[in-house]
Amino acid sequence: MQRTRSNRLTGLAYVAPALVFVLVFTVYPLGRMVWMSLHNWSLIAEPRFIGLDNFRQAFSDRQFWTSFLFTLKYTALITPVLIIGGYLLALLTAPVSRVRAFTRTVIFVPVVIGLGVSSLLWYWLFSTDFGVINRILLDLGLIDQPVLWLGVDAGTSNFAISTSVVWKVIGFGMILFVGAIQAVPAEITEASLVDGAGYWQRIGRVVLPLTMRTVLLVTLVSVIGSLLAFDQFYIMTAGQPQNETATSVFFVYLNSFPYLKLGYGAALSLILAVTILAFTIVQLVLTRRSES
Amino acid sequence: MTTAPARTGYLIAAACLTIATVMLLPLAYSMLASIKPTAEAAATPPTYLPHGVSLDSYRRLWDYQEGLLTYLGNSFGTAVLTIVLTLLLTVPAAYGLARFPIPAREPIFVVLLLALIVPYQALLTPMFLMFAKIGLTNSLLGLAVLHTTIQLPFSLYILRNTFAAVPREIEEAAVMDGAGSLQILRRVFLPPTVPAVVTVTLFAFITSWNEFLGALVMMSSSAKFTLPVILATARTETSLGGTDWGMLQAGVTISIIPCVLVYLLLQRYYMAGLMSGAVK
Image 1 (cartoon, each protein chain N blue to C red):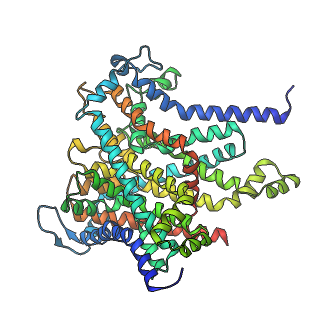
Image 2: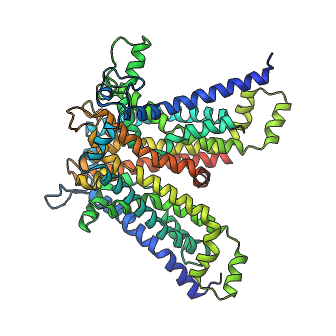
Image 3: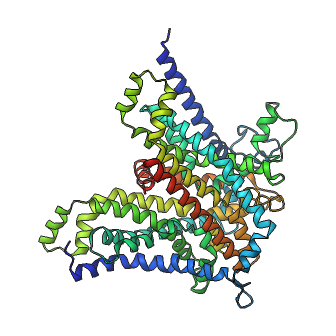
């Protein structure tokens, strides 16, 4: 299209609604969050400028570190399972066949249901007295008495919640890996077969390197998703015991909404956002490097 | 005697079907529990299969607090508003970005994709305060605005790419015929980009229908709760004294059905969207 003035204006008119929307509902809140993080504000009293005090307070707040480290622990627990498990499921279901395509469809079903709703489902499955998981373990003789899965011990809760989340999202990575594996040219895998390479050798030397970009991408998405975990912990443990299973977003939520420490909550949000940005940059650099 | 490759084939099929069963068991078990009679749904230890069939759990859910219809209506209403807002904002923007010589096009595109790197969870407090000021808290429209901010970058990204791939020749022919830009958008661009528009609609629905934290924070009266939020409150506060497990599973079943149906019916679009979203 010609670079006329009227074309420029028409184009801008088409983009304007979205641009205004993003400026009002994303850019402005972002600026506002930075402003809030520099103030002491309880909603009742006027905001008071306190510089970086909120950040100083955060880093010396034991509860902040507990939530931050717990979130990292959860992320470290769940990411390898999602990546390795998802990749193995993709290797199993990628070749063309009806049974495999059916399995792929089924594994993906939990991805489209809500995390809140799937957490409610697993909250019940893991319930001490009413949950079928304890019943199965008791019937199999693996345990002598019902296990208190949720909200009593942070480690046990983390394990139970991670199990439910793996069930819910493993299909996401799998589908992207299937796409990447199917895109590996058949001649390359065939050539390696002729060379007498075994199945796992072929996967390790040919398929995996060619799908590395997707592996990194899924890792990034999984890590960010885990760092932002909230629904499953809010529903399944409500942060118990003693806020030991309160994730970073949970901690931000507690301070901002029930406690109304708005400035402090904003500072915590900002720390969280910067952490996520840092992970994103590291991943992008790794992706670039894996391509060159 | 079976040959080695055939045996491998059977093993793979068996492994696939085992995994598929394990994945489906929680959903199937929840659906079965939702039709257990009240006493059985609250039994310790729980039964594996229902010994009787009853719709009592659904009846209690139907009447729970403001009534199931209110919550279904809130969830559907928010999802529909989210879809409408998302399409109204992203279809024209994608067209403008793909085809017009807009000044500072790249910076504008980056700003529009900003929400991809700034998670909405981190922006919730300032958004809540702003919404409170302009009357958008405790409102379906307000929640839809929030869901649109989450959905906008992904939708715009997919639509811009599809619009950019429409051949220029058809567009030029329409210009020769004297068609205006709106006509061109409607007659030239929309027909071939229907799959992308369906994809965007589908993702907007699923995002809005499933979103929890924003709905929890933005809605203050239980009459405005969405389905996941009212179910989350129902996990502890019910008329039966303890948790009403049967009713909860009836709620889980009802929440899951639209998503699974939409996914199974529109699988092709869903996968296409996921793949094009993944290469960004």
